[in-house]
Length: 252
Image (cartoon, rainbow, N blue to C red; front, side, top):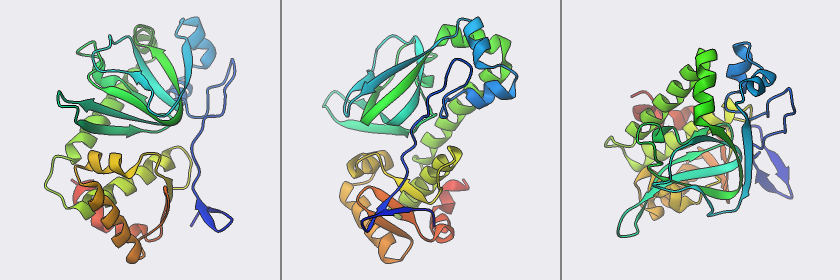
């Protein structure tokens, strides 16, 4: 089990981008690997006037964009984590998703041409701002960029569909933890050692559960030896058993 110990407490790594330079992408660049694999390097991006703007730092609760803002850019999380949400006329919040370094925000605004939700910083956050007109121009030169955009949009739609089924609280939370671990692994961080950047209330809202239910299920998972919990740090001790719980959702 990959975890660091400090004064008896469990600490999971928090993905933070290493800065790139004029010729190299940041370590969490949402398009870096796609561009490099297609023979399009960072210098070529400058030649196409597709400049990426580093924006931030945002503090916890700050909005990167809000519902109804005019769409002109896609954002990629550079460090920290971001939640997307909608708020109804009664002031009730509905969490739509959580976004880690290297993940894109704002793809669902392409068609309506305005952002359909808020993007809110969870803790300190930096993002990269991609001008969408410039990105569309780049896609004509590098079709892999367009494929990556479609792939990520399709993934977002699929993730939303997972919450629509009649699943138990155990199944939902197990799938959430396994999915979060896979996303960490995509960024070369330990798959079984997680930092929950989001409060449990937000996790409960996203999973359409009561906050008390999430706390109760986490305790049950811990009592069964499936996970170890230390504040916002979670270590998955029995990944195969946790996956078995999540199987109805993950293999849908």
